[in-house]
Amino acid sequence: MQYFELICTAYLKTDVEFDKSFETLSKYISFSMARGGLESLHKKAGFKYYVFGGFLPFEKSKIYTKGSTYSFCIRSIDEAFIISLSDALRQNIDNPDFLVVQTAKKVIKQFFISELYSATPVITTLENGDFWTIERSGDIMQLQKQLHDNLEKKYQDFFGEKLKAPQNFIQLLELKNRVPQNIKIHKEGKKVTFFGNKFRIVPNEDEVSQKLAFTALACGIGEKNSYGGGFCLGN
Image (cartoon, rainbow, N blue to C red; front, side, top):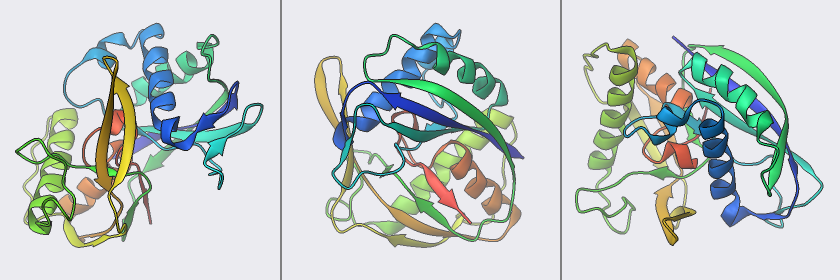
């Protein structure tokens, strides 16, 4: 098992506020996919098997400045997608916000994961359509079940292989934020806010749990991964 990573160098043509950066990145990736022969995946319902992180280095002013270069990372479990996207990103020269001037592909083979850290908000939707937060739900066991089930479905959908999980892949989950984190986008002309949380997760050591933890790194944990939700770091 392995995943594929694109480290992208972006030259900003305009100032980008942190609150708008996830939408800016998501639109750039989506438009590149549409122009690069990946339109069917872009429009496809269900899992898209990729996730991206925000601009680095992080600006304390929360404004990424015009004329500067920043990096961002895109991960996927699908190598063909990463190869096609690498070319498409650099061809998106008419974008008003930024230009990807360089991409570098890395292959990361499965390794033992002792901890996961969510670098971007993890989005989880409840049955009533609300987002899971400690204030609105507080049911940690339900949260862990949904995170586990979501990763299991991603794995099984991509590999066509059913997993027999002896237990939830999460051994320990620690909430790292005091108030809900969010990702803001515009959809069909309307402002939409996805509420989520930052977590430290200790996965179990069994084979299935480690596969699911690696899947979390590969294509994101939770929902709204194509908007930047659930991008994780692991060690």
